[in-house]
Image (tube, rainbow, N blue to C red; front, side, top):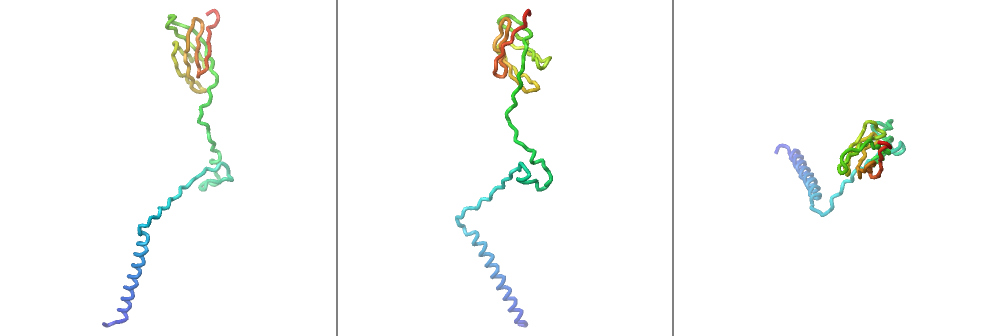
Length: 157
């Protein structure tokens, strides 16, 4: 052998590589040992929108106040304002009468209903349900969103 020192260096390097691979392989074998440890659950992030500047701010737009203007709104429908109907006329034979109604608050809006008939009417204040309960000689009983009203023909009609 020409250089005994190079043989010593090479064998030292081989021993070092073998030792390092044993340590690395042993570390991975320890993690895959098949123990019955429960896997750790990753916690979920919870983000809360601040309602005032003291609770926090938008990190991307720190001078923005748009977050503080958000308010919860009610999902309940707003009550429809009171609607007044006028009985404009009655038509038909006694067993098959029709009533003509107009909406006082919305001129030009009219309904023609038979006894027992139900319809929906859209107004600026919301939608209402109108049901004709009964038709008599000079009056009509209607149910508007569940409340009953008696409408009469004007005198002398």
